[in-house]
Amino acid sequence: MVKTNISELAIFGGSPAFKELLHVGRPNIGNREQFLKRVNEMFDQRRLSNNGPFMRELEQKLAAFLGVKHCITMCNATIALEITARALGLQGEVIIPSFTFVASAHALQWQEITPVFCDADPVTHNIDATKIEKLITSRTTGILGVHVWGRACDVDALSAIAHKHHLKLMFDAAHALACTHQGKMIGGFGDAEVFSFHATKFFNSFEGGAVTTNNDQLAARLRGMRNFGFAGLDNVVDIGTNGKMSEVSAAMGLTSLESLDKFIQINYENYLAYFRGLDGIPGIRLITYTETEKNNYQYIVMEIDEVAAGLSRDLLVTILHAENILARRYFYPGCHQMEPYRSYFPNAGMVLPETEKLTLKVLQLPTGTAVGKAEIDHVCGLIRFVLAHGAEIRKRYESQ
Ligand SMILES: Cc1ncc(COP(=O)(O)O)c(C=O)c1O
Image: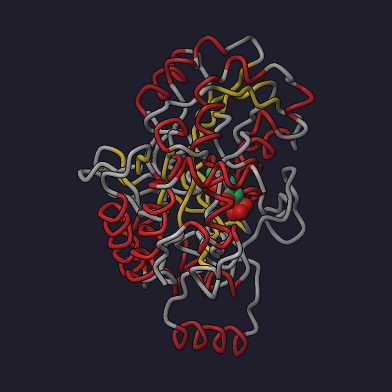
């Protein structure tokens, strides 16, 4: 039901706009029959893990799709980041953006590598390459760029800095499957790139991830490290862990891959629907993606300018949650404000002004195959209504 009076908002006791929760990343499910057929095959062959046929098929297909020499699947992107950092010999300090999911930082800290947080570009939300060089010290061994929202970070600038200072360069491409940089698929940049196939990503293998690289030696080391460092049946040649992707995950990955174009098309149509629906609302900016590059459009990212809008991002999120619209605040409050980093670097915020601003004004709206056009129109209509009455709503909310 369209709301015409602020008393009808759920935060003021009205009924929620949606009966069921609308999620930012409700899993996309491909062809079930295909998936179940693969699962049956898996049982017939009694291959559940350990370099199984589905895992190898997924690696081949992803490598071909991304135009990269090696794709090494893993159990998730966090472990993949950890293994890659170790395989590259990273230690001491590594420069990363603070405006990222905390896994990027944890993957380093887990191995006692200090993440040194760099500020974000306020327009692209990616690491601000112009601020990297002054963070380099004698302890710096690498840069970990993140392609936030699937938009490539400044790969050329990062590569030039890494080259100049003899640093390793890896990318957290968790958001960036099927996205391009200068027309080339993300996956082959830097020393290695890491993807996430988590259930909430538009392409999922339940849990899962992959490292891609064009470096033969690095690929061999990554393959060994994800399997306890084994090179043969009883020969352990390196430190390793268990980072293997299981066959059931690979079966899901293959099934998701067959629906990849459809998922992207739906995301793109949703993005256009949001773009039209939110057009012209004062205080709101929807993050747009360059049409000349490919994006998977899995994130509908909105910035809200509290002054122009008349209410804060956080109040808008509270209102939306009450209406069963589970908007998210990625990446609030920024890695530098999370433990253990907050204790290690209590003043980090002073050198991260743009990150601090972003963490207060950015939110993500529901999309994916579980969200229809009518629902998007309804969400946009509600946001338009809320922002048209921003000051009034805020006053009433604060006096409750
Ligand atoms: C930027 C980024 N890096 C890393 C990860 C971790 O991925 P996974 O859940 O596969 O470990 C995520 C997951 O959401 C992410 O968004």
